Length: 487
Image (cartoon, rainbow, N blue to C red):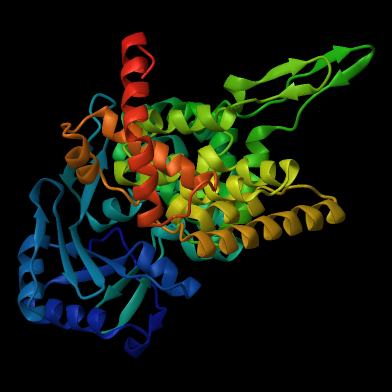
């Protein structure tokens, strides 16, 4: 029973305090003569009373063969990774993972770990933090295995590595980002020695595959207060290695003029406050990411004007254009790119409408450009209010409410939801006997502009009449622009 290096605690747990699926797996193990423990995050969350749908088991034996028996019992399928001695089984909303006791090690030359068979002690010792090194032995009684004091650290809300932190982080440098993630999710503090080791070893994060880094980064962004984890990434030097554009937001430039010092707010910490603000109102990870990106181009557009001070003219457009490269570098899903680009590009527009006066034409353009992201845009704008002056905050919020109400009013009146030209491209090509090409887009744009400016209503008959009146002129204009190279 278990290897001699382990002593099972006398602390036992009532079996009915665990879900049926764990008790059933334990019964299959007993009938098969297999020793098994539930380990890691599930045990941690059991004590913290947090819900989880991922349950990890460590098998003293062949995990894949045992997983096949479990899959047969639950009429499911096994996804196995023999190289890593791992098998996964989806059962409804729950994912079961079975791992053979093992050692893992990164040699610094490969982004994949070297995996060897090991003892249960080896398996527990290789885990990232003591709060994740807890195990419950599923024998005739369910008993706790706590070799490294994980329960005590959980009570203290401390993240500490089971072994020397430099060894733990060398084995898998991704654990440095996981430290920031767990600190953000659990509101725990990273133990001092461990934090210092991360600062020393931050450069080793480059040995890890980008997909794994991004997965952890998005979990930080999805936590209740992302600024905790993001701040740790910055303060340890990890952020400079994994997301330099975001890291570059930090710092304040000072210019002295006429005996006075002129600075600007630290854009990085402002951005983190905006992300925290928006996270109180949405779980949409891409809206949170847009909040993280809304000022990303300020370092590139920063200028000091002797009359107006620090300016960041055009940072919203430059920031939107930066998103494609950022998405590719982070290996983010490209289908979310247009949404983030739209929010970054437009995040200044509602306030500009307040400053310029709310005209129907300006409202139509905002509604058309924001399209389905309109409500999220205003959620971002409200989150961007970080003033500590209560009267200013109230005034800004009222301004956004006034503009948003006006947008809804104009949208409904002018039928602008999912706006596009009532005259479609096929009809334009048929009328003008032209093939698909830029001239079709040019003419559709002329019709859309007329609607947005209020010259014609957003109706097919009005748009058709406007097209018939102007089509020959537009063709001539397009050909003139084409000949001069301006189209």
